[in-house]
Image 1: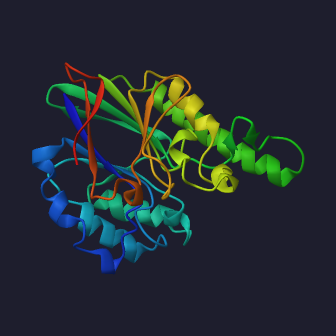
Image 2: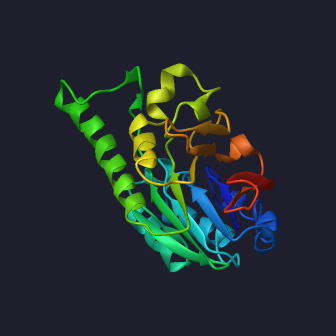
Length: 247
């Protein structure tokens, strides 16, 4: 059994320091790994990255993240990644990591993701160069996720993104902004591999639960949605493939 703690959209700045830490200190007793689905900071500054590393680092369990759109705001995403990596936090962007946990191998593949929309209401790679560039970015990012997922050999495989791979977990958000919250290409990439669970954030007013067209469970773990420091999901259980076991 592998216990995965997950949260996203924590938007850490100096005034947030200490808010999550008491619950995070309990993680070694409740989970084997913490996955953070982007928007670690408010404006993507180096100072905010250091605040996140202080709040979410040194927990006694591995911490794996992707960046979110807020983490790109200051165009310092490379420095943000350096700060987190130096603090022992793994940042994924089109790659994967494999963790040895209690005799099991957990593979985590991650990308930030991008927008574009979903079947019946999505942008297409046609027309103006600006539109082609927009959709081209979506397609490149989705291919990176698919390649990362397919590169992993593990007992359980998790896809970690910031943007949503399905519309199910956007319910509650205005329909007009769905194309800016996720894209179907991410869901298609997740279905191309034996993915056990997909986690994302970004949709603060969305729903928690959904599934890809291929049946992979999707969970929106944005902090405003789960309303706590993290949820814990159980993989490789003898009873169920995926279960919310603790919060």
